Image (cartoon, rainbow, N blue to C red):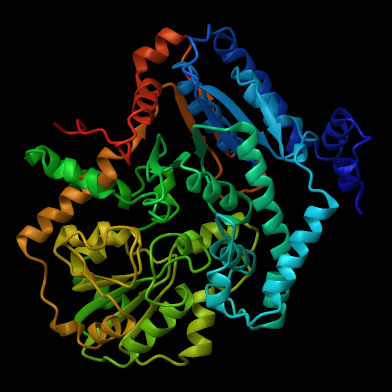
Length: 564
């Protein structure tokens, strides 16, 4: 055991000693946090002095098990919004030995905490979890049996598979592989223990609402599953395509597996009932320009250095046959979070990509472009894995082999913008990527291989089985372009997703100075802008969020006055 681990786990070593150790050991990493903490404390003094309103008797619970600075500040920001309306915030932290997360919450006036360490398991508990893990591991273990694993009220399967995919950067982890199976067996007892702890935390806190930036993966998934099963509402917040906004989605049993960027049916209906104006149509076009050509740093991750290409330029650049139609496959990050959302026609993202490329190779009637996701570069850089081969290329090489000349692999750093393909391609294929909310706005038929983002709303080509999907790929050249009514639906949906859903910040400011350098602890940060409660009220962002939270019929936060 390392000295750090010994200090962190020993109950006899005060947190202050560990804090001094870490500051001395990692001054460039920890020192900037204390400087930022000091500056934040000065700016947030008025929040600590805020007179709390009369309690509404409700508790908002914030599982803050990460040390990411921006996430902590965002959680504190949203807790402030609810505290000002009488909610009682309680924060769930990972360890008493790391004081920085607690100190950040405290500078914002959030003072009630519980800790993972407060809910130790007894020897009997551990024996129970090990016995259950042994029982599961002793059965027939396949991808499907692991994917369907449950313990009590928690669905463990996606949490386990996604965690392994994330650790190995593999879109199709082979559960029968001895090393992968060993990792599954290793994870099972800990996952089951977390389910027991989550049950006890929920019983101790009795929350009315949970705020979370991450409702999935091995650490958070059990807490959120158990909360929803106990009829505790969960608000999932994420950063959308804008640097100055968040998206909010209310998770209940019927929406637990909704993609955070999707538009709920009742939200879409509210937008469709608006009088569609030229200003709204223009706003959609402006959003596509900003999203495609670097208007926000968040989008620059996926559109870094791109430029417009006309169809003729695309054909020349990629050596495509200009006499044939163009079908573009927008690949996902195969090992990222998409497993959690919706239903898939294929076992996993890796199998989808392999079978899609095989179908492309078998259909020379069109040009096929396999567009590798540009975020592969950003995410591998962030994780310091720049020398690692992109999993898409490995899967295609191992399972498809050499590709015929009518199939072209487009590298993640290609200068061709996604918007150029919407304007120049004839067909686009995805499982549930953002492209499903974009390409149909230009009349392009968009074929899906799963649910979860913009499917089954009247403007996508959705298949109900893998056989139907693969048959469509075999005859893709016969699919007609979208009708005017389908394009109108798509554009209304895009307006809802990209224009109405973002909750724009006023009281705080996001600071993204370093998107890929994981060693820069202040690279993803937020700063308090408001100088008083009156200014918060004048800005209106925090009050608008709190008002939405208290309207349980609204699944998505929507601002319907963006362009009217």
